[in-house]
Image (cartoon, rainbow, N blue to C red; front, top):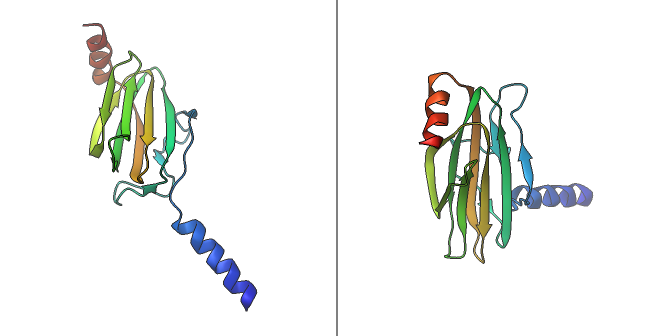
Length: 146
């Protein structure tokens, strides 16, 4: 009986813990054409889960030729030392403290998502979907050079 209680308490502690992330994550398009979620237990129908404080995280997302990627971020930081950043292949930077699931679109070949979290916990969840390009990719690629 006591062994069962210890196991349940341990599992509950892990389930309630805030998410931890790391720098240098590489995200490639899955072979099964399914979206990539962070954390893997989140989806856009839920509120963003808590991210532990004092973290810096980054994901470099590859976008194959012939595809574009759609990124949806849900999250909010709690202090001025924290932010979300997206950086496209040309080096254009968007920095924010509150994301409301508004989509970002990226052409090939890559983009980066970076999160810096200060002394207060933040919330973060994101989804990436890769879609075959047609006219949109041509327009997006040409607009980089204009």
